[in-house]
Amino acid sequence: MRLFNIRGGVHPEDRKDRSAGRPIEPLPLPKLLHIPLQQHIGAIANPLVQRRQYVAKGELIARAQGAVSAPIHAPTSGRIVGLGLYPANHPSGLSVRTISLQPDGKDRWHKRIAGVDDPFALEPDEIARRVAEAGVVGMGGATFPAAVKLGLGKRYRLSTLVINGSECEPYLTCDDQLMREQAAAVVDGARIMAHALGASRLIIGIEGNKPEALTAMQNATADLDGAEVVRLPLRYPMGSEKHLVQTLTGQETPARGLTADIGVVVHNPATAFAVREALRFGHPLVSRVISVTGGAISAPKNLRVLIGTKIEDLIEHCGRFCEEPARLIAGGPMMGQSIPELRVPVMKGTNGILALTAAETGLREPAPCIRCGSCVQACPCGLLPLAMAAQVRAGDLDAAVANGLMDCIGCGSCAYVCPAHLPLVQCFNHAKGELAARGRAKQKQTETKRLAEQRAQRLEAQKRAKREAMAKRKREADAKKQAEAAANEATAKQAAVTGQVTAEVDAC
Image 1 (cartoon, rainbow, N blue to C red):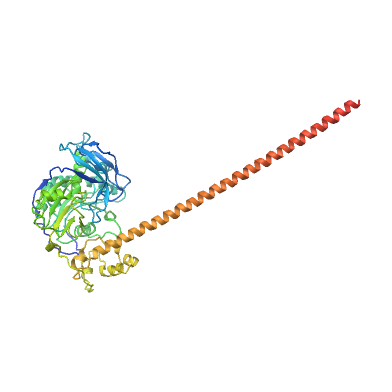
Image 2 (image 1 turned 180 degrees about the horizontal axis):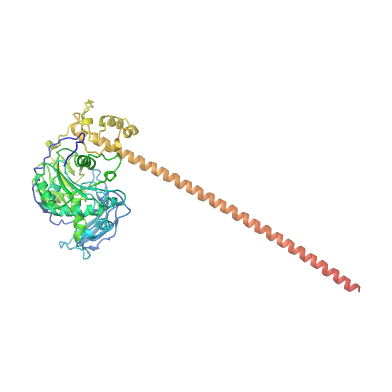
């Protein structure tokens, strides 16, 4: 298959040897699970359980709200011991609504858990519904509800499903190991998704530093028509779906658009595996594979971990730290987020826990920009990071947006190559956050204005109704007076006639 070149990108050391090839181990049941209600892009899930309630594994404990949301299920059987705020797996460390579950050690599945014998006999809408009910989200880190993507076939003419097995972030090996051990299951899940999307072509892209995964996936697709496993070049960020699609098809996704605009949908291997589990066995998404690695980890491993497990439990299982880490990261070193503390929980989008030494981080003090243009050459989106950063620092966010700020994918390639060690990607993320805050403030202002206008209209309508009621009562009173006057006049006339008749009679 012919591959197409993309601009920019970098070649960081992959440092995957620490955990590559290590079999996936199931982490023993922890003593306590903390399950956040916000583990996906979209509306927060609505809790359905109460404290001291017993739940079985896979039982629905929080329902999705809105079109873009995902339900939450009990990762194991046990008793609900808390429903409140708990620190989030986010650099801010702020607390979020969380369900705390104490496992009973039985790991007993809910009695209603059941799959289907032939998922390919189901209609696409039914597949999407079952995936939605299973709480499956994008497992590559984006955490977009998978069912929403599976519904794109109704709005777009889709020809191709791409399984993004590039795993281009350094250190991470969870997708690599999953494809090695569960190649047939991943391909089965991918075929189910392709059926739901109406896509006739399946492409599985894997970077060349994963030869065992390539071989396993090639063997799993050997007898399938329309399926192809492609060896991708080693370049970061090959895992960016728009750049991956351009590499495979030569087509560029429109700015601010979707790959579905050009007939392609991209999913992660772990997502494909989760879809297969949901359809074949009825298992909701309650666990995932995570790479626990880095120079400060005593025994790096690939672990299958229940959602809600505290990160300190993973570190403990891997022999704790062999030296004090300089930085703890959830995800990869390029796009991952700092971990505020070890007691924060694993979420559906957590694909790695890194404990990096000071030598690995290479932290240095930023220096003034020398305008070398390295960031421009490295940017895979063809942007001008140095100009955008200067505009952001000057507070001119409109100019930064005009230069493509919102097209930045936050890959960190610019910061990686910057000889001045400027925190460029952090600068852009801050600017996006500021723009989002402004947008929310503007929306709030617009909504406040709309409500004020509605109130003014409502008050005016009430005044108008009151005036009309008063006018009606006045008309009715006037009519009553006129009627009474007419009646009195008629009575007087009648009395006069009667008096005249009486007088005439008396005269006779």
